[in-house]
Image (cartoon, rainbow, N blue to C red; front, side, top):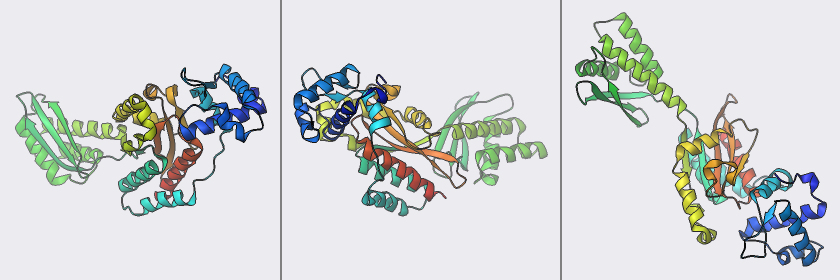
Length: 344
C-alpha cells in the first residue's frame, strides 16, 4: 500500500471514498462532476484532490478518460480502512437460509448455499467442502499385461478411481481377482483405511484365505487411496454465468480469462485454503493473488465450522475487482455463519 490511512487528510479520504463508491456502483471511471453534489467542494478542487490521490498511487485514470478509478492498492486501502459494512438485508439472509433448509445432506446444503450466494452477489460462488474419506462399494482389476493391471475402485457415493498398478512377484492377476472378491464380499461400506486394516489382519490371521502378495498390494493401494482422498480438496463452483453481465461486454477478454481460471479447480482450492485460519472474511484483490492476476479478479472467502468448532471448509465468491465489497463481504460472512449453524 502506497499511502497508509493516517497520511490522508479528511478531504482526501472523503473524495477517495466517493470515487471508490461511484466506481464500484457503475464500473466506469468517475469524474469530478459526478461526485460534486455529494461534497462541499468545487469540481476544480475535487480534481486537485484526485490528482493528489493519483500521485499517492490510490487512483488512476485511463488514457481515454478524464475520470479516475481506484488502483488495486486503493481498493485494498478502501476495504481495510474506509469501507463501512452492515449485516445483509433481511431478504438476503432469508434467501440464503431458505435454500439451505430445503436440503437434507451436507453436500446439498453446501451446493444450495453456494448457489444462493452466487445469485445474490452476481458473482461465481465457491465452496471448499469438508474432507470425507471414500467408503468402499466395489473393487475390481482389469489385466493390462503380464506386469500391470488397472485397479477400479468405486465408492458408496458413486465416485470412481482408476489407477494402474504394477504387479510384483507373486501378485498375479488371478490372485488379485481373488482378493477383490474377498474385499467385495467382506469389506463393503468400510472407509478405505478401515478396509486396509481388515485386509492386513486377514493376511496375518489366515494366509490360506487371501494370497499374501496380492493382498499386500491391495492393502497398500487402499492406504494410498485413503491418504490421497483426505489430502484432495473438493470444490463446488456455481454461477459462472453471473460474470457475463452488461458490464462484461466492455471487457470480454478479462471475463474470458476469468472463466478459464475458474476451470482450474485445484488452484482455486489452494487459494481458498488460505482463508481457513481467518477469523472472518479474507479478501484477495487482483494481483494480490497470482492465480487471478491476469483477469484482475477478487476473491472474498470465509471459513465455516462443524459442531466441534473445527474449521471444515471455506465459502466465498469470485468476481471482478469492482465488486460492491461493502455489500458482498457481510453476505459471505453471513453464509459462512449459516453453514456453521447448519452443521451444529
